[in-house]
Length: 350
Image (cartoon, rainbow, N blue to C red):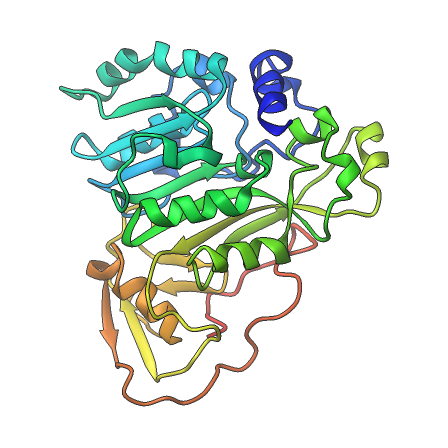
């Protein structure tokens, strides 16, 4: 039911983002300046059919090969095409013909707008639950992104497993989606409006963490989140008692990550060289690293920076020769903020 409903809702029911009945499939954060500049180069028709719930513009991706799961009309793909540069590539996968038609209609327009001699974006029609049936080589992508789409599919665990297979070692799945603070009742899954509005298919956050770890992403990291408002009274009544959140996670494909935040006396010094994050680099919600300062962190975080594309931007202190136990105060409980008015401390919990 999920794929058919998604095709109908995003291909026929919704004609533009103004037709949405909740703010689940909308982006609330103001993009940073370099992203705003890139968005200004995206065709207006593409932007009008955009239904993402977050900003999937990971940093330090120049020259990277990126896969966009559920690329829709192509806004994220065309944004990322500018960030990876002409030597990088963005491949979008989507199952809705109407959305793909919009994306493909403007391929040459964007190539010319970007000033590229050759295009670096292509779109494939396909079901992200069946990535194995597409002509995509294992371990061929540096980064995989997705924007408010995984909630729409039934086999979410299969998507995470396929993404792990397609990523290069040290690569990451960086994606925004909708989560619930409890499991959504099964009878709501077949409601076409609740499903199309990215609510009934939202994963309970505990189930998401279990599925991500089972797929091989041992230490999922929450980057940012916000509580969702449901202004439509009829929808709110059906979902009474369930809290929803839009959240961005990053999942690294790394061997040897541990189940706890283990302390090996390690630290990093950020060089301030990531474009758009020159003063503060955000690894995740609890690791916001100021340039030039010694920043203690756990072994997993040390590997996420040292064994990924971020390594050239840091100086690394320490190794794994001595263990000091678990960092105090890490883990447990609902990971999301209940209020949008919280302040994030520029320090790590581990």
